[in-house]
Length: 560
View 1 (cartoon, rainbow, N blue to C red):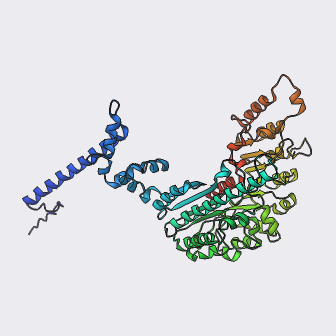
View 2 (cartoon, rainbow, N blue to C red):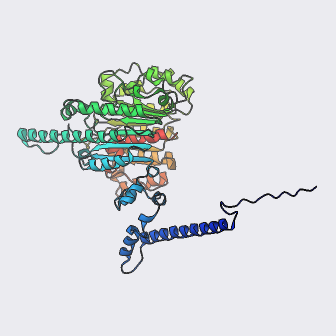
View 3 (cartoon, helix red, strand yellow):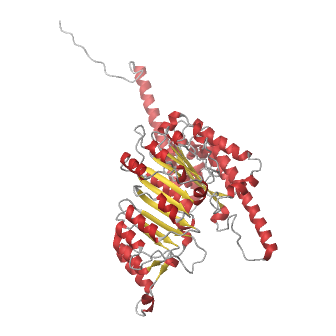
């Protein structure tokens, strides 16, 4: 007996009868009509966005966008979200003001995975910040906020700056009172803005990167702003305590946090803040940055015992006085992953109140380098004496970047020569800044005119790619030599015009314009057009060194 088995072909639901076949046909026709309707709506939306030339094109565009029949309001929300995903963030914010439907779609979580905000500490910023954080604070995955005092950005003096002309004792007292009142208002606004940010993300469990930068605590050179003006702006300390509690609550509620960075935020981070992190989050943290030179006494924001929990840490940024030999030993343990980026802030305020006796010695640095061959170090030095720098600069530090910023203490030529000798295999960035008031006489680093330390730095450090100088005398012939030595490998050469000086022989030659010759020779050496920095205000590395350091530290840590 032969059995013929036929395998039934899959049919649409309800197609086993003639009636079912008719239903399937109607279903397919209805689906095609829906597709055509969606295409017509999308075509109308695009036509409205483009507009048509001729009379009444703007009116037709507005009708196509806001009309109920064939406009954007009739499109599915998913389609609108997909269309506006191609817009940059500023354009999305502008588009959110069109209608309520667009506003709902434009604040869909997928469109705002990260927020990077730079705020002037001004009352005008508060309603905008509240709106943005109310919409995005509960779901954003990466949040970076930078605060900057409005008066500081606009060139006004800080709390320690008298400013203005001499108007006598009475005029100075009135001016000082007005300045004090103005800065008290700035600090009060600053506290309100910080509270707005922290309140909006207190229950955000999706937060993966959190970065806060406050530009207020370093405006005063001696670092006493938090002790004087802050106590007047917040007499009872209620707002500061509330901010500290909110910060700890955010850390305790986090479930995916891998990047935590806080710099110069007026005592927001306390020595007990990190204890709010659970062990599971601390074990998976990859970057930790805690920079605040206003911590009183010998207290630190993190201890070696606390650092033992961060076994997966790949990037670390601390005050140099807080980075002890015991911490270096913890980072070399076998249960820790190799540290790849280390940023250290050396501030004169910290050096005055804390000791350098506990810093790592050369053996500790050798052990760290053996643990991680890719370890690179970034050092920022604020007004540090030469004898202290000689203690800090150990030969085995894999120093890749160093930034000197001075108001009182100048860097000596011996320090520059030491750096070029010890770190010739690693150094890529060298910044030398001296913010002096009297520009008539800049310090000269070269004791011997035949051996300029900056020329030797360019000769020995073959990986040097950035050199920025202001406030130190740079001779024109030495600048030409630096350009010729490094050539096109020196990507950035920033030297302010007032720092450049010429020999008498170059000035005496009437046939050659020394400035034009300098520009021509340096451009030929670098293989690209070059000119001296005419406007110092155009470069943040000279005008806002702390902000420049913080941003460069972020890029330095992200470049792993």
